[in-house]
Image 1 (cartoon, helix red, strand yellow):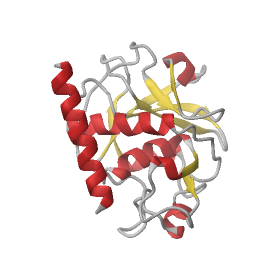
Image 2: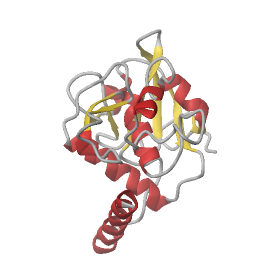
Image 3: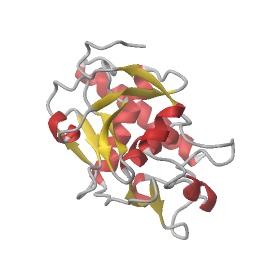
Length: 207
């Protein structure tokens, strides 16, 4: 129930913000996931979340590079000399308002100064965390964990072999363990998502 109230509050605040600022809801690829190759271990991929409509915007992507904390970054900083692998979204076709919520949650993760975790997508202390895992509960996170947490917090299932272990935002030992290496990696993550575009500048093939 508390998670539903939190989500409703976020959506309401986003709606008020857009009304006051007289701006539109999410456009372009805001709130969608982006991937590049060249990550380790085992030559896997690297994941990020689009914070702006296109990669031509200033600091368009939010990700965990493996150093420091979750951060905004330039497009070249995200690619880090590697090859772009595409834009993806969760199944279920999120609305513009829901994509706004994705962006807001990504920024929330950034504000918490969360360090990196090589093994677990999302790690937290089970004893001090309530039924649901909020951004402030997360003690470390992986690059694909940023994507997984944002989507699954808002009930968009990504990784998960059954209906009981997919929501990484639920405090549960088996769910936390299920969302870890090698069960899920950025490259495996996209098998549960929908391909959107081969480019992030708005000129690619859009599905």
